Length: 273
Image (cartoon, rainbow, N blue to C red; front, top):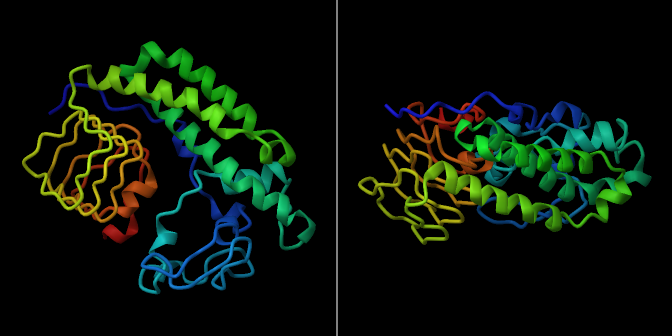
């Protein structure tokens, strides 16, 4: 068994989508293109025909079967309820159509800010990253302050300028936690590869293409999975419990089962059974 301590329970629990407090923004703002992910074409800013009057999805329990697997892997990291309840004080585009344009413009910005908070909260929960906790806490406070700005300020925000230093920090965290001599396979094309006999413990897999890869039973240790593409990757029986920077969309896009081990902050996707 690994000797390093598990991450602490952290603020990521608060960065989960709560559709009951949102105005169905993810069902309206993005455009859909008929494909393997979406059964229909839908223009940006137009409500999906499956969106009910209470802002819930009318086919939520059957999304994959009805041709909408792309919806199941989307996660706003709690941005939807922040916009609806805080930025717009509980008002929505439906009862106040004049708010629609502003409300829709804020979602991509707020989602990026909340995703950044997810990563920073993870850093603060990693005992091995203690030397960088002070810097991470300062960055998190900066991002939290941004999320409290009004709609006009948020829409005009240069998110990239605020995410860039966080990205650099996450790189240093990764190196500190994984070790300087850990294998670096960032951006590697591992699509469809059988990796069951490959040592990926503590590997740098940032942005790696793991689409359809066979990772059954693999212990990924403290592998850095920031931005890794895990669509259809077979992680049945794999140990992802200590991986760095893993998110719900990545996990939901993969194929796991009851024996797949996940970090404490992530729930097992319903599709895994």
